[in-house]
Image 1: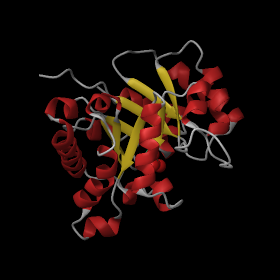
Image 2: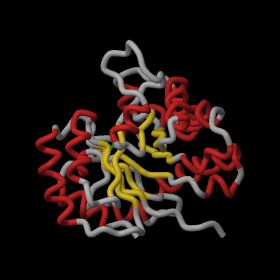
Image 3: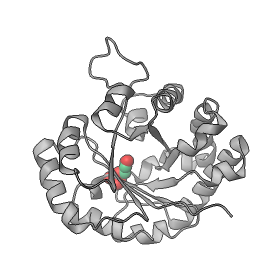
Length: 255
Ligand code: 13P
């Protein structure tokens, strides 16, 4: 039997918490969260707040940082973008790739997502690949097909020896920021489908090592039930990660 996957508790702040709010957040949050090595806590602050977050987290290696997006090119005339090397230099260990807001608000395609995953792996960081269907796609019975279509271009550019670096986050678009959460059963069934795709591409053992997180209206009062589902290895939290007490409670719900 493979080693159990450590729960991952990740907060995606999106376009919230500038540097001052970031310092205030961590002053409060770190008092509520005792260091522990049986779980992995990660924040994705806005890029402009990254230095404030890193400063606040000195002495707390149990809490890691990532960036919300990167460009696949190494450098150049790409106004407003960040490269993987810059993110790494700033102290990022992980990168969100293909978040539903990148796909649906900013028009990112699955092929662009794949190029970003390639760049993140080449740069030695961990891609957190986000996938998920819209409500129309779910109602049309296409949820698993859509997620498979989003996974395919990425899985085709990953080498077998790189699978251990991958994290997948299933975030149904209709559950993000809406207060509507996937039922624990729906989440478990999609997580199973994602892991089957990974197993088809890379074999069972490699697939079993990939953390698959759930995201979409995760709150302190539903986190424990979601994380108790088979194959749900943690959560990617938006709104509820902005509040130190709320996110500490979600971290406490793991295990
Ligand atoms: P909410 O938790 O606000 O629904 O956002 C989820 C999300 O998009 C995390 O990446």
